[in-house]
Each structure stands twice: as C-alpha cells, then as structure tokens.
Length: 75
Image 1: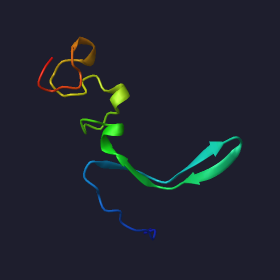
Image 2 (image 1 turned 135 degrees about the vertical axis):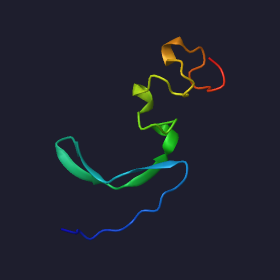
Image 3 (image 1 turned 30 degrees about the vertical axis):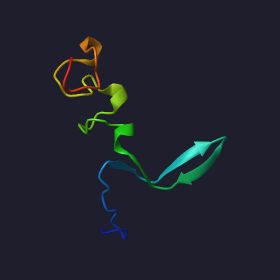
C-alpha cells in the first residue's frame, strides 16, 4: 500500500539523516530529518562508517598499517 510522502532532493557532499524518535531523560521526542556533511560518517562513500572502516582512503592498505590513513596517494 502506498503511503503519502514527499521526495527529498539529494545534495552533493551531504548525507540525509531520516527523522527518528529518540529518548532523552525518559521522554520521547522526534528529531527532524536533516542534512549533514557526508564525510562526517562515511568519508569515502563506501557505505561503511568511518569508525568501522578498515581502509578509509581506499588505497588498499588497512588503517592500522597505513602511516597516513586519510591520504589515498600515500601509505
């Protein structure tokens, strides 16, 4: 069944955080959807959050072995 809604146009360089319910101090409140800088969570755009990404810059060298893990041109 179709549910009425609206389209949100993509913004280059940003990621959309969908609206969600959050609990604070025993009360529930709705956080509105918003745009955040895309690199705040997934710098390389591979779908894996930065904190869980084993190779942030995509150069084929794992972060723990990479002297410069954010620079794709050096390892």
